[in-house]
Amino acid sequence: MKEGLKVVQPSFVAIITGAASGIGKAIALGFAKEGYSVFLIDNDSVALQNAINNDFSSFKVGYHCGDVCNSVDVKEGLSTCLSQFGRVDVLVANAAIMNKKPFLELAEEEWDRAIGINLKGVFLWGQAVASWMVQSKRVGKIINISCMRAELAASNIAPYVSSKGGVTALTRAMAVELAPYGINVNAIAPGRTLTEGATPFYKDPERRKRLENLIPVGRLGVPEEIANMALFLASDKANFIVGAVIPVDGGYTSSKE
Image 1 (tube, rainbow, N blue to C red):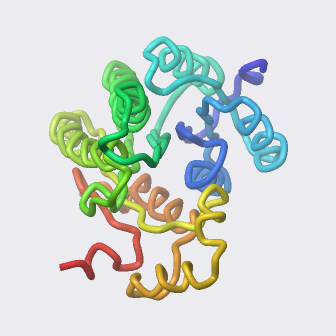
Image 2: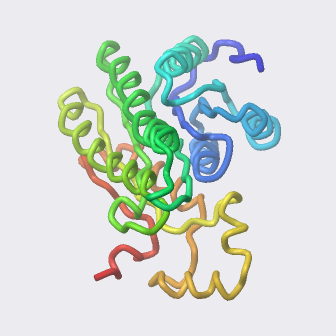
């Protein structure tokens, strides 16, 4: 896949990782509809190309196909974004995987892959973008996507729970260190969200109803609701919000004793 388009000078630029599908794509579309130029990062070249052709054809968009936990890919991705758009104002570190498997059966490489994408990827992209912002003397926003599972464990997802707990802690550490430079760092913790990837999980109407009954608002979330929070955190209205981890879960975590 060829990367990059002609150089343009947009007003604001947002990088979104894991942007080819699900919550990441919804966030990228949300920013695009608000007039941002968006730069999409994903390691699935087919899904990435499909998203660009079908969802982002009328928007200012750039992209890089690469691995968020590979420092070379991260540097190349940021360099491509800067060569095309000339700046970065917002980073949304969303890329993540969930590998369901009992703890006693986990292979080391499965653990490493999940921690790498879900946590190391947040570190590498956050450090790269923040370094550029500091060196360029630009203020900006970094939004990490954590999860309600950072607070509520469940069976068979130990690497996911561990990595998202790490994202929450890393967000607070980044926020403290980067705030003096004018870089606000916060996180969003989605609850059960009806993405295309999760649709098979909720296909059984009885199962879906049982799970929805556990959520105080009585329904699943939709990706656009996560996007709305990301847009708020990226706006000037959120300038005094630093190091927060905001649940967007219909009250699920608040209802648990």
